[in-house]
Each structure stands twice: as structure tokens, then as C-alpha cells.
Length: 125
View 1 (cartoon, rainbow, N blue to C red):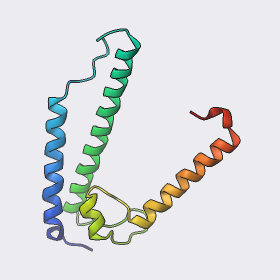
View 2 (cartoon, helix red, strand yellow):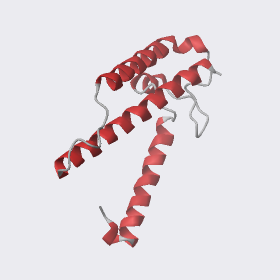
View 3 (spheres, rainbow, N blue to C red):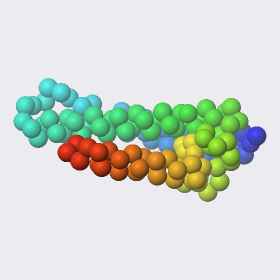
């Protein structure tokens, strides 16, 4: 098991990321559904909601990473249980998977897309 203080620098980085995310959310205008009726306005509203959703998801990931540091389980892959290399944690401090498990998930997702495209070609977006 890894020690909490082993990741004090990463905890500081995550805390800064969380503060930046919070400041960005406070400074950006909330998506406004009643701003207009044109398709361009609707596209902008959809984009604003998508951006807000991405920012909310990232904030959750950062908070979860901080919690894992406090619980001394940070840096352990959620799938295989192996330690995540420090370089990966420094590059993506909110990550929950080692590079091998992440690649495996990406290959599985790609396979599912290929299957969908093979069996449902008219459903391609």
C-alpha cells in the first residue's frame, strides 16, 4: 500500500486543478435555454451544456483522486490492482487505470464500435 505523503506533490496539483475548475465554472455563464430560437442558438446551448458536463465530470474525477490519496489507495489500478507508474500519475493525476488496462479498455471500445458498424451500418452517425 502506498503512503499518503508519497503523493503530496500530486495532491497539491490536484487541489490547484480543482480550484481552477471551480473558478472556470463560476466565471463562465450558465447555459441559457431561453436565449433564442435559431438553430445556431440551439447549437450553442447544446455546446454549452456539453462543456459544462465535461467540466463537472472532470471535477468529480479530481475529487475522487483526492479522496483516494487520503484513503491511501491512490495510484492503484482499479482493474488489475497493480501500481500505476508515477509518470502516468504526474501526467494524468486523476487517472484510475494503469496504461495496460487503459489500452485494453480502448481496444474493447473499438471492437464494440466495429461490431456495431458491421451489423448496423445504417446506424453510423
